[in-house]
Length: 511
Figure 1 (cartoon, rainbow, N blue to C red):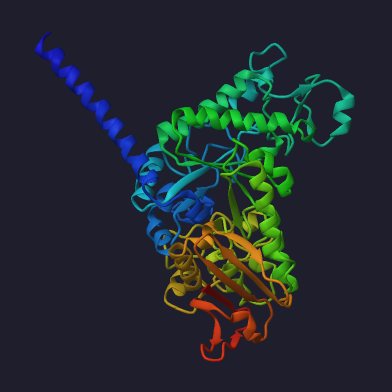
Figure 2 (figure 1 turned 180 degrees about the horizontal axis):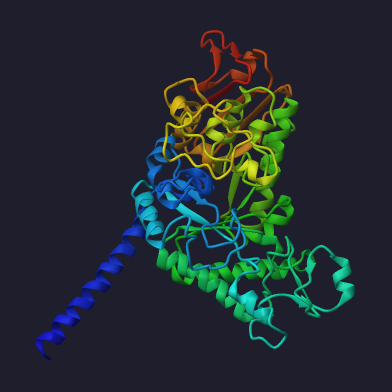
C-alpha cells in the first residue's frame, strides 16, 4: 500500500470519526440533559421575532442572538414555525422541504442555531407541514401537467361531481383540467395523497433528513388529523405509527408533538406508538373560560380525566399545555384586567405537562384576528432603540404604547416578565409540577381554582384567586401544610389564616 493511499485512508477515517463524534455529542446533549417531560417550550414565529440583517424580517441568526434571553427566561425548548421556502409570509405552504427560506438565512445558520441552543440545553423542534404542499411545489407543478404525469398521484384528484358537491370548498379547479384536486385548507395548499407509497416514502425521507443530517430535535406536526378524512381515522393513526417507527430506526431520540384540534377522546389513539404529545386545546379553552368568567369550571378534574383517557391509549404520553398559539387570539386581548396576565401564567406553570409559551405572552403582547395581527413583531425596546426590531407588519395591537417592551420589563421586578421567570424557576426546581398527577379539591368556592399535584413521594397544593378582590381561605383547608413555594398574599403560620391578593396564587407543599 502506497504512502499516499495510507494518508488518504487516514484522512477519510478522521472525517468519519469527527462526523460521528459530532453526532454523538449532539445525542449526548439531549440524552444527558433535562427529560422531555420536564421541559418548557417557547413558540417562535421567526418572521416576527428578531432581525439580524436589517431587512425588517426576523431570521434564524436573530433567534440565535436571543438564546441567552430565552435561557434566562428558563425555557429549555423552542418551536420554530415553518422555516422552509414558501410563497406566503406564514410559510405553511412549502415549496422545498429540504431548504431554508432565504429571508430566514441558510442551512448553516440553522445548524449554528442548533449548536448554540444545545450548548444552553435548549431543544429545537421545527414545524413540519406534510398534509399538503404549496401549489407552487415542483411536484404539484408536474402533477398539473396531466393525468399521465408520474407525479399526478402525489395529490388527490377526482372527476366525480358527487364527491365534489359533498365538500365544495375543498375541491379546486386547475386550469381547465377535467379533474379537480383536493385542498382542505385552500387552493394554494393541495393535499398529498398518502395512499401513494411514493408520497409516504418521501415524507419519511424528509423527516429523516432534518433529524439525522440537520440535527433538529423533533417536529411540531401540522394538521395531523387531516391526512385521511375522519371516516378513515384508523388509517391516519397507522400512518403516524409508521412515520414514528421509521424515524426511530435512524435516531430514537426525537420529539413529535402534534396539532390535533379536537377533543381528548379523538386524540388518544394517536398517542399509541404514533405521536409523543398533542396540544391540549380543551385545556386552552377551559383556562380562557375560567379567566373570563372568573369561575372555575373544574379545571383540575377535567385535566385529570383527560390524562386518564390518554393513559388508556399509551403509558408514555406527554400533554402539551398552552394558553394560546399562533392560530388564536392572544390571551391578553381576551381579558379585561391586566393583572390576569400573571394569573394566567401561574395557572399554566402549575399544571402537569409540557408548557408551550407563545412568543410575547411573557410581556403581555396583544392580538386579535385576522392572523397577521396575532403574529405581530416582538416588542423588544422603545421605538428606534433596538436595531433588531422587526417591522414586517405595522402592529395594530402590540405597540410600545400598549405593551411594555422586554428591556423595560427586565428592569422592573414587578413586571409580567419577572413573574414568568419566577414561575418557570419554581417549576424547574420542583419537578412534581411537571410530572405529577392532578386532582381537584372538593368543597371550594368556584371563585377559587384549587387542586393538588401528587406523586408517590410528595403533594403540592395550588390555589388561585380568580376574582379582583382579596380573598380569605378557610384555615381548615390549610392544616398539615408545609413549605410555601409562592404566595401573592399574606399567610399566618400561627393561625393558618390565608389572604390571597386579587388574582393571587398560593403554591405550597403538603406535609
